[in-house]
Amino acid sequence: MKTFRVVSQLVRARMVDLLSKNSRIDGRGLLDYREIKVEKGFIGRAAGSAQVSIGSTKVLAGVKVELGEPFPDVPDKGILTVNAELVPLASPAFEPGPPDENAVELARIVDRALRETETVDLKMLCIEPGRKVFVVFVDIYVLDYDGNFIDASSLASIIALSTARIRRFRVEDGKLKYEDGYMPLPIRHIPVTVTLAKPNDGPFIVDPNLEEELSLGNRISISIDELGRICGIQKLEGTLSVDEIFKAISIAKDVAPKLIDIVRRESGLNV
Amino acid sequence: MSSGFVRVDGRLPDQLRPIKMAVGVLDKADGSAYVEQGNTKVLVAVYGPRELHPKHQASLDSAIVRCRYHMAPFSTKERKTPAPSRREVELSKVIKDAVSQAIFLENFPRTSIDIFIEVLEADGGTRCASINACSLALANAGIPLRDLISSVAVGKYRGCIILDLNDEEDEAAEADMPIAMMPSLNMITLLQVNGVLTEEEFKRAFNLAVKGCMEINMIQRETLRSVYASIKGEED
Image (cartoon, rainbow over all chains, first blue to last red; front, side, top):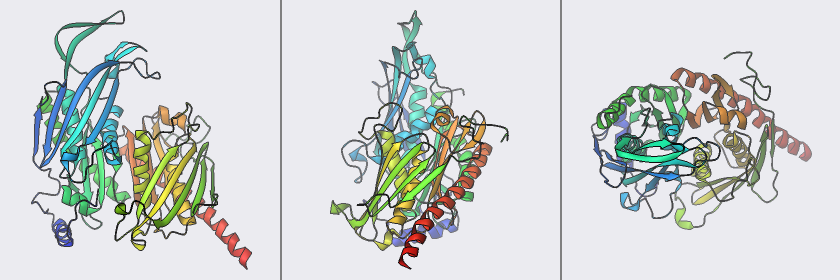
């Protein structure tokens, strides 16, 4: 991904110089996100959807719920699957074709935070153990890429999930009966992801834009839930010292509640 | 950490599995290594720095690293289809990111360094064993490195923080966390957390992982030293 756009040495030097004075090339504070906008229910045909913009990075997540067979090793649980597409209209660096390693990594970072916290209570989505369960598909579409698609995708996914509505159902003797009206998915937690970057010599910033992402060289994504627990980490490019990693985690824990508040506000979720 | 806690295979919480390492195990590769950690068996070959095809992928001011992590169909409990899974795609990327940090890529512009990893038997910790083997294979290929890279996983298993999880522990673990580092430089090149940990648990786990990496680093060094010391001996 590094080859498609070059950041000039001048911009890079200016960026690092500004960071040493606690400011950033676009005027933000070190721990400030760009403006975050959320448009939920964007796709009528999806059970839930959300378009999240962080600055000019834009991600659309859609949730579809279908019937399927459970995995043999967990016969009494529904299925959650997360897929991400870096669609070619989002960046000159994205090409048509099956998901590349960056798209797979993105999907698995988002998936891990949702799965490990058991955010979707999959037991509630079992109809007939071993035979029939609900399958929840989260599809992430990166539409415009100006850095940090990970945080935007995780935010869009949890908002799409927590605002999703499925037909009200009950289970009678292992048979699925639909009732009138709609119901939410069983959502138990609010995991969000905070991505940080830093130059070799200099402080951490959160929410790197594309220029910062391409220039700073060291990056890490940390997922935190509403209880302040660490529910996923992925070190991305570069290296960090032991102390820097502890520092990154404490910053992520400080910043995450702002993102969690956005999810609460948009979804009305009371967890 | 409760000191009395004994694990499914009888190890203590902070104890590594038995480790075997060898380098130069393949004839045709520029560098190669074989690593066993417990029942996990990994074979790695390094080719390069060599001319890159297709050429448009080349970088004018450095080598590029290409890495394929692949599990043999017979390596797992149930047969794994040979086609690469999403997990293998992700692991190929994170292993590439982890080992590239140690290589003086700027010394080899326009070339590629290709790393092929075959997991022959998987019993937990395959990405860590792979990174340990990659590091040895790169050294065996004579590629200049900033430092060796040593890697191990830690996890939380029944509330206890443990080192170097095997598959049985991994499956039941509340959290697992592979790390890789350049021990002499004290820099982390891979860190993933799968699972849920408090900040305090994370710190304990992380410190245990660093200790594990140091132990593995000693074995890696000893492996290289024994090979190259004996070659030197033959020449004398």
